[in-house]
Length: 129
Image (cartoon, rainbow, N blue to C red):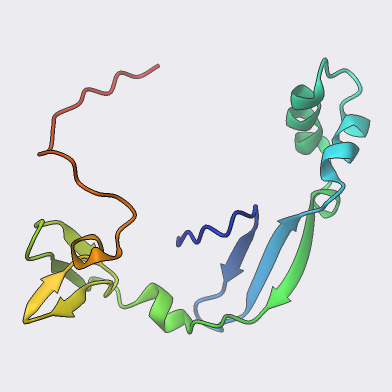
């Protein structure tokens, strides 16, 4: 799976063998239609929660055949191809490493990250709800 944030709710599915791709987008009127499928709902949020479960998929989504602008081979890479960042030591998958001055870097260490490391790693405890 690859996430690209364009501020939209949509998903593109690709057959990796044929390159055929479809894009699912929620219909623009789906929120209004949800109330019709959940008349028992107490509020808008509940109407959407219940209505989306009952609505036929063709009422929920528009489906479009699309052509990828990035070749599928570039997106999925090759199975098992991994590298280790020479700066942070984290594993890099799918040939996403950056080569710079004879160094192998993850995108964050190469200056292309979406975060800035503030401190050394800390141990956290996750308690199931």
